[in-house]
Image (cartoon, helix red, strand yellow):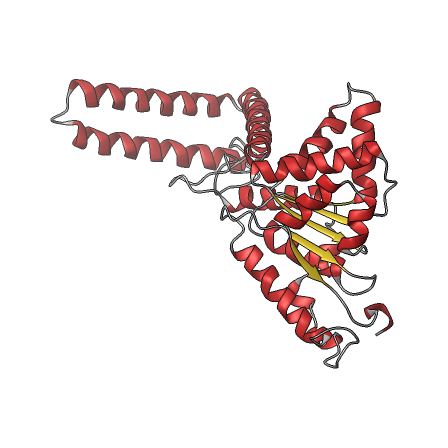
Length: 326
Protein backbone atom coordinates (compact mmCIF):
# COMPACT_ATOMS: atom_id res chain seq x y z
CA UNK A 1 0.00 0.00 0.00
CA UNK A 2 2.76 2.43 1.01
CA UNK A 3 4.62 1.69 -2.23
CA UNK A 4 1.52 2.42 -4.31
CA UNK A 5 1.00 5.77 -2.60
CA UNK A 6 4.69 6.63 -2.93
CA UNK A 7 4.52 5.76 -6.63
CA UNK A 8 1.59 8.15 -7.13
CA UNK A 9 3.44 10.96 -5.35
CA UNK A 10 6.58 10.30 -7.43
CA UNK A 11 4.46 10.54 -10.57
CA UNK A 12 3.07 13.86 -9.37
CA UNK A 13 6.61 15.15 -8.77
CA UNK A 14 7.54 14.05 -12.29
CA UNK A 15 4.55 15.90 -13.75
CA UNK A 16 5.53 19.00 -11.80
CA UNK A 17 9.09 18.91 -13.13
CA UNK A 18 7.89 18.30 -16.70
CA UNK A 19 5.46 21.22 -16.50
CA UNK A 20 8.08 23.55 -15.04
CA UNK A 21 10.56 22.57 -17.76
CA UNK A 22 7.90 23.45 -20.35
CA UNK A 23 7.19 26.81 -18.73
CA UNK A 24 10.90 27.53 -18.42
CA UNK A 25 11.40 26.92 -22.15
CA UNK A 26 8.60 29.39 -22.90
CA UNK A 27 10.18 32.02 -20.63
CA UNK A 28 13.59 31.51 -22.23
CA UNK A 29 12.15 31.80 -25.76
CA UNK A 30 10.32 34.97 -24.71
CA UNK A 31 13.54 36.58 -23.43
CA UNK A 32 15.51 35.49 -26.51
CA UNK A 33 12.91 37.17 -28.75
CA UNK A 34 12.99 40.39 -26.77
CA UNK A 35 16.74 40.49 -26.12
CA UNK A 36 18.84 38.59 -28.71
CA UNK A 37 22.00 39.51 -26.76
CA UNK A 38 20.90 37.18 -23.96
CA UNK A 39 20.70 34.28 -26.40
CA UNK A 40 24.21 35.08 -27.62
CA UNK A 41 25.54 35.11 -24.05
CA UNK A 42 23.92 31.74 -23.24
CA UNK A 43 25.36 30.24 -26.43
CA UNK A 44 28.82 31.53 -25.48
CA UNK A 45 28.51 30.06 -21.97
CA UNK A 46 27.44 26.72 -23.43
CA UNK A 47 30.35 26.75 -25.92
CA UNK A 48 32.91 27.49 -23.18
CA UNK A 49 31.50 24.67 -21.08
CA UNK A 50 31.72 22.29 -24.01
CA UNK A 51 35.31 23.34 -24.74
CA UNK A 52 36.19 22.75 -21.07
CA UNK A 53 34.91 19.19 -21.28
CA UNK A 54 36.89 18.50 -24.45
CA UNK A 55 40.04 20.03 -22.94
CA UNK A 56 39.85 17.82 -19.85
CA UNK A 57 39.86 14.74 -22.08
CA UNK A 58 42.45 15.95 -24.60
CA UNK A 59 44.84 17.86 -22.31
CA UNK A 60 44.62 16.42 -18.78
CA UNK A 61 47.98 17.97 -17.76
CA UNK A 62 46.96 21.59 -18.33
CA UNK A 63 43.22 21.42 -17.71
CA UNK A 64 43.37 23.06 -14.25
CA UNK A 65 44.95 26.25 -15.59
CA UNK A 66 42.55 26.41 -18.53
CA UNK A 67 39.62 25.53 -16.28
CA UNK A 68 40.24 28.61 -14.16
CA UNK A 69 40.34 30.86 -17.22
CA UNK A 70 37.11 29.34 -18.52
CA UNK A 71 35.39 29.88 -15.18
CA UNK A 72 36.42 33.53 -15.19
CA UNK A 73 34.98 33.97 -18.71
CA UNK A 74 31.71 32.32 -17.72
CA UNK A 75 31.42 34.44 -14.59
CA UNK A 76 31.98 37.59 -16.64
CA UNK A 77 29.30 36.54 -19.13
CA UNK A 78 26.85 35.80 -16.30
CA UNK A 79 27.42 39.25 -14.83
CA UNK A 80 26.78 40.80 -18.24
CA UNK A 81 23.61 38.75 -18.59
CA UNK A 82 22.37 39.80 -15.13
CA UNK A 83 23.05 43.46 -15.95
CA UNK A 84 21.10 43.31 -19.24
CA UNK A 85 18.15 41.56 -17.57
CA UNK A 86 18.07 44.14 -14.77
CA UNK A 87 18.21 47.01 -17.28
CA UNK A 88 15.29 45.39 -19.12
CA UNK A 89 13.24 45.08 -15.89
CA UNK A 90 13.38 41.28 -16.02
CA UNK A 91 14.14 39.38 -12.77
CA UNK A 92 17.55 37.69 -12.81
CA UNK A 93 16.01 34.29 -12.07
CA UNK A 94 13.21 34.69 -14.64
CA UNK A 95 14.82 32.11 -16.96
CA UNK A 96 15.50 29.62 -14.16
CA UNK A 97 13.27 26.70 -13.15
CA UNK A 98 10.80 27.64 -10.42
CA UNK A 99 10.70 24.53 -8.24
CA UNK A 100 8.01 24.39 -5.57
CA UNK A 101 10.69 22.92 -3.29
CA UNK A 102 14.07 24.58 -3.76
CA UNK A 103 15.80 22.01 -1.55
CA UNK A 104 15.09 18.81 -3.52
CA UNK A 105 14.13 20.52 -6.80
CA UNK A 106 10.81 18.65 -6.82
CA UNK A 107 12.37 15.19 -6.73
CA UNK A 108 11.34 14.40 -3.16
CA UNK A 109 14.87 13.36 -2.23
CA UNK A 110 18.03 15.04 -0.98
CA UNK A 111 21.47 14.47 -2.49
CA UNK A 112 22.26 11.88 0.21
CA UNK A 113 19.23 9.84 -0.86
CA UNK A 114 17.08 10.68 2.16
CA UNK A 115 13.48 11.84 1.85
CA UNK A 116 13.07 15.60 1.63
CA UNK A 117 10.76 17.19 4.19
CA UNK A 118 8.35 18.08 1.38
CA UNK A 119 7.95 14.36 0.52
CA UNK A 120 7.52 13.40 4.18
CA UNK A 121 4.84 16.03 4.57
CA UNK A 122 3.01 14.84 1.47
CA UNK A 123 2.99 11.27 2.75
CA UNK A 124 1.62 12.36 6.11
CA UNK A 125 -0.96 14.68 4.51
CA UNK A 126 -2.07 11.91 2.16
CA UNK A 127 -2.43 9.51 5.07
CA UNK A 128 -4.43 12.05 7.07
CA UNK A 129 -6.89 12.57 4.24
CA UNK A 130 -7.28 8.84 3.66
CA UNK A 131 -7.82 8.22 7.37
CA UNK A 132 -11.23 9.94 7.24
CA UNK A 133 -10.50 11.76 10.52
CA UNK A 134 -8.40 14.69 9.35
CA UNK A 135 -10.39 17.32 11.27
CA UNK A 136 -10.85 15.19 14.39
CA UNK A 137 -7.11 14.73 14.77
CA UNK A 138 -6.65 18.42 15.50
CA UNK A 139 -8.38 17.93 18.86
CA UNK A 140 -8.54 14.18 19.49
CA UNK A 141 -4.93 13.29 20.27
CA UNK A 142 -2.79 12.28 23.25
CA UNK A 143 -1.79 15.91 23.88
CA UNK A 144 -5.40 16.74 24.73
CA UNK A 145 -6.05 13.57 26.73
CA UNK A 146 -7.12 14.35 30.32
CA UNK A 147 -6.99 11.38 32.68
CA UNK A 148 -8.72 13.45 35.36
CA UNK A 149 -11.99 13.10 33.46
CA UNK A 150 -12.13 9.51 34.67
CA UNK A 151 -13.27 9.12 38.26
CA UNK A 152 -10.89 7.54 40.72
CA UNK A 153 -13.72 5.96 42.66
CA UNK A 154 -14.97 2.37 42.84
CA UNK A 155 -17.31 1.47 39.98
CA UNK A 156 -19.96 -1.16 40.54
CA UNK A 157 -18.96 -4.64 39.44
CA UNK A 158 -15.36 -3.72 38.55
CA UNK A 159 -12.12 -4.40 40.42
CA UNK A 160 -10.48 -1.13 39.26
CA UNK A 161 -11.62 2.45 39.24
CA UNK A 162 -12.39 3.99 35.81
CA UNK A 163 -9.18 6.03 36.09
CA UNK A 164 -7.03 2.99 36.92
CA UNK A 165 -8.65 1.09 34.06
CA UNK A 166 -8.04 3.91 31.60
CA UNK A 167 -4.38 4.20 32.67
CA UNK A 168 -4.06 0.47 31.96
CA UNK A 169 -5.70 0.88 28.52
CA UNK A 170 -3.47 3.87 27.71
CA UNK A 171 -0.38 1.82 28.59
CA UNK A 172 -1.46 -1.01 26.27
CA UNK A 173 -2.30 1.48 23.50
CA UNK A 174 1.11 3.16 23.79
CA UNK A 175 2.74 -0.27 23.60
CA UNK A 176 0.65 -1.01 20.51
CA UNK A 177 2.01 2.16 18.88
CA UNK A 178 5.63 1.62 19.98
CA UNK A 179 5.68 -1.99 18.73
CA UNK A 180 3.50 -1.42 15.68
CA UNK A 181 6.12 -2.65 13.20
CA UNK A 182 6.76 -5.85 15.13
CA UNK A 183 5.26 -9.07 13.83
CA UNK A 184 3.36 -9.60 17.07
CA UNK A 185 -0.18 -9.99 15.67
CA UNK A 186 -1.45 -7.42 18.19
CA UNK A 187 -4.95 -6.12 17.51
CA UNK A 188 -7.21 -4.20 19.88
CA UNK A 189 -10.90 -4.56 20.74
CA UNK A 190 -12.37 -1.55 22.56
CA UNK A 191 -15.77 -2.31 24.03
CA UNK A 192 -18.12 -0.58 26.44
CA UNK A 193 -21.15 1.70 26.46
CA UNK A 194 -21.20 5.07 24.69
CA UNK A 195 -19.39 8.14 25.98
CA UNK A 196 -16.44 6.40 27.61
CA UNK A 197 -13.64 7.58 25.29
CA UNK A 198 -13.36 4.69 22.83
CA UNK A 199 -13.59 6.86 19.72
CA UNK A 200 -11.32 9.50 21.24
CA UNK A 201 -8.63 6.90 21.98
CA UNK A 202 -8.95 5.48 18.45
CA UNK A 203 -8.23 8.97 17.13
CA UNK A 204 -5.24 9.31 19.47
CA UNK A 205 -3.72 6.08 18.18
CA UNK A 206 -4.46 7.02 14.57
CA UNK A 207 -2.78 10.42 15.03
CA UNK A 208 0.35 8.88 16.56
CA UNK A 209 0.72 6.34 13.73
CA UNK A 210 -0.09 8.83 10.97
CA UNK A 211 2.74 10.98 12.31
CA UNK A 212 4.99 7.95 11.77
CA UNK A 213 3.98 7.89 8.08
CA UNK A 214 1.68 4.91 8.55
CA UNK A 215 -1.41 4.55 6.39
CA UNK A 216 -4.42 4.53 8.71
CA UNK A 217 -8.02 4.09 7.59
CA UNK A 218 -10.68 5.01 10.13
CA UNK A 219 -14.26 4.10 9.17
CA UNK A 220 -17.48 3.24 10.94
CA UNK A 221 -18.84 -0.25 10.37
CA UNK A 222 -21.81 1.33 8.58
CA UNK A 223 -19.53 3.19 6.11
CA UNK A 224 -17.50 0.04 5.53
CA UNK A 225 -20.71 -1.75 4.65
CA UNK A 226 -21.49 0.99 2.09
CA UNK A 227 -18.03 0.55 0.55
CA UNK A 228 -18.56 -3.22 0.37
CA UNK A 229 -21.94 -2.78 -1.30
CA UNK A 230 -20.57 -0.28 -3.86
CA UNK A 231 -17.79 -2.71 -4.69
CA UNK A 232 -20.18 -5.61 -5.15
CA UNK A 233 -23.22 -3.94 -6.70
CA UNK A 234 -21.97 -0.58 -8.00
CA UNK A 235 -20.40 0.58 -11.24
CA UNK A 236 -17.24 -1.47 -11.57
CA UNK A 237 -15.71 1.13 -13.90
CA UNK A 238 -15.31 3.57 -11.00
CA UNK A 239 -11.79 3.06 -9.70
CA UNK A 240 -12.58 4.97 -6.53
CA UNK A 241 -14.76 2.13 -5.28
CA UNK A 242 -11.95 -0.35 -5.77
CA UNK A 243 -9.50 2.04 -4.15
CA UNK A 244 -11.62 2.44 -1.01
CA UNK A 245 -12.21 -1.29 -0.91
CA UNK A 246 -8.52 -2.13 -1.27
CA UNK A 247 -7.64 0.23 1.58
CA UNK A 248 -9.72 -1.88 3.96
CA UNK A 249 -7.31 -4.76 3.36
CA UNK A 250 -4.00 -3.03 2.64
CA UNK A 251 -3.78 -0.07 5.04
CA UNK A 252 -1.22 -0.37 7.83
CA UNK A 253 -3.99 0.07 10.38
CA UNK A 254 -7.75 -0.28 9.94
CA UNK A 255 -9.97 1.15 12.68
CA UNK A 256 -13.54 -0.16 12.57
CA UNK A 257 -15.65 2.12 14.73
CA UNK A 258 -19.15 1.34 16.02
CA UNK A 259 -19.17 -2.34 15.10
CA UNK A 260 -22.75 -3.55 15.50
CA UNK A 261 -24.46 -0.41 14.21
CA UNK A 262 -24.54 -1.77 10.65
CA UNK A 263 -27.34 -4.01 9.43
CA UNK A 264 -26.17 -7.58 10.02
CA UNK A 265 -27.03 -10.36 7.63
CA UNK A 266 -25.25 -13.21 5.85
CA UNK A 267 -23.58 -10.79 3.41
CA UNK A 268 -22.28 -8.34 6.00
CA UNK A 269 -21.12 -11.07 8.35
CA UNK A 270 -19.18 -12.79 5.57
CA UNK A 271 -17.60 -9.55 4.37
CA UNK A 272 -16.57 -8.37 7.84
CA UNK A 273 -15.02 -11.77 8.53
CA UNK A 274 -13.21 -11.56 5.19
CA UNK A 275 -11.73 -8.18 6.07
CA UNK A 276 -10.67 -9.15 9.59
CA UNK A 277 -9.35 -12.56 8.55
CA UNK A 278 -7.44 -11.28 5.50
CA UNK A 279 -5.76 -8.56 7.56
CA UNK A 280 -4.72 -11.11 10.18
CA UNK A 281 -3.24 -13.36 7.49
CA UNK A 282 -1.37 -10.39 5.95
CA UNK A 283 -0.07 -9.32 9.35
CA UNK A 284 -1.96 -6.02 9.17
CA UNK A 285 -3.13 -4.42 12.44
CA UNK A 286 -6.79 -3.74 13.22
CA UNK A 287 -8.65 -1.92 15.99
CA UNK A 288 -12.36 -2.57 16.55
CA UNK A 289 -14.48 -0.24 18.67
CA UNK A 290 -17.96 -1.32 19.69
CA UNK A 291 -20.72 -0.72 22.21
CA UNK A 292 -21.34 -4.48 22.24
CA UNK A 293 -20.02 -6.87 24.86
CA UNK A 294 -18.10 -9.95 23.68
CA UNK A 295 -21.22 -12.00 24.49
CA UNK A 296 -23.38 -9.74 22.31
CA UNK A 297 -20.82 -9.94 19.49
CA UNK A 298 -21.04 -13.74 19.62
CA UNK A 299 -24.84 -13.56 19.40
CA UNK A 300 -24.93 -11.16 16.44
CA UNK A 301 -22.05 -12.43 14.31
CA UNK A 302 -20.99 -15.89 13.25
CA UNK A 303 -18.78 -18.10 15.39
CA UNK A 304 -15.95 -17.61 12.87
CA UNK A 305 -15.93 -13.83 13.39
CA UNK A 306 -16.26 -14.11 17.14
CA UNK A 307 -13.48 -16.68 17.46
CA UNK A 308 -11.15 -14.61 15.25
CA UNK A 309 -11.78 -11.51 17.37
CA UNK A 310 -11.41 -13.42 20.62
CA UNK A 311 -8.19 -15.18 19.59
CA UNK A 312 -6.34 -12.38 17.80
CA UNK A 313 -7.56 -9.22 19.58
CA UNK A 314 -6.73 -7.85 23.02
CA UNK A 315 -10.12 -7.09 24.61
CA UNK A 316 -10.14 -3.80 26.54
CA UNK A 317 -13.26 -2.91 28.46
CA UNK A 318 -14.24 0.75 28.95
CA UNK A 319 -16.45 1.52 31.93
CA UNK A 320 -17.49 4.44 34.10
CA UNK A 321 -19.74 7.48 33.85
CA UNK A 322 -20.66 8.90 30.44
CA UNK A 323 -17.89 11.48 29.83
CA UNK A 324 -20.16 13.61 27.68
CA UNK A 325 -22.03 14.52 30.85
CA UNK A 326 -18.83 15.28 32.79
